[in-house]
Image (cartoon, rainbow, N blue to C red; front, side, top):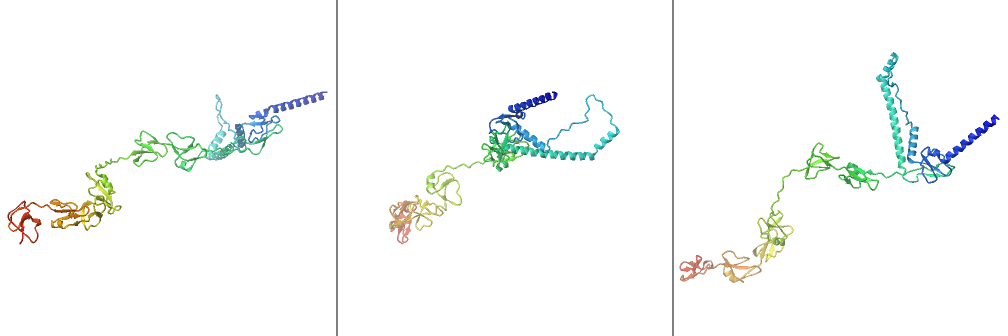
Length: 431
């Protein structure tokens, strides 16, 4: 009878424990214990979950990202020997405890341990252990960063409905996010890629790659009190670099001071008149002509004003001021007018009459002092018959005639006596 009762009690205990386990699975307590929750969406992502947690049939166990990363990092550290138990310091006596005197054997062991030879051995072992741990830690960090870069898509893995357990199909991958990285042009200027530069920063165009809203910012120069001038990356032409200790703030900044140069006093421009006349010669009025220029006399009026014309472009062009022709050589009458060009003359083509020749005249462009014009006795543009100015002579000189002595013929002889009208009057008669 006792055996039957014990069997019934054992069966009752097993049945109740099975029901409790099934109820706990339905409620998802196993999933909640690892920081997860039971979801019914088959597209919900759980990334790489090797430990399958119980959930009700037709649901999934979703574990958040931070918990997944923590569990994966912890597992990797355990696999690679990263988890090292902390050493508990021994030999620390409690407060109020009396210090025990060391025996001779303990003192000898302590002296042996503190010897330089043993210290070197301990240091070598410690370095080897720390080197292995640092190496494994860096490898773990690189692996974690690589996995984090692979998560951008909302669907990081595919799941299927099973008999109350989570099962993953295919690898859960993430594409890396775009990162703002500096190009070579940005690195050469010691710049950094940021979303937005500061007010005094210099922006290098197209200096970063990655995101669209990414700028290469070069830290600007800040002028301190010890710098009298302005802090720049490179001084201007009118500035000189001056070394001042702690005068500028910023990478590659120098203190630039204005150069001390004597002020250039501009020459006073002369006030030239009759400029239009010089322009007709294709010239310019200025105080000094160059070696390749010729001067047109009288084309510019004013103090220190000359009409300068380029020789190579001119030759001997015709001028409106020359009534004849501007040439380099002239066989006729040369007018008192300057032609533009090097050694150019204003040449007049004149024909003299007999009357002008008998009156001791000649064809000219202008009559000189002591001469008078005999109108109509020289033909040609700009030609004039210029004869000597004849004095009115009168008086009686015998067989001769009182006339202006330059008009006396070579065959006649000036005979003195009895002529009035001026010192040039004389008696002209036969020999």
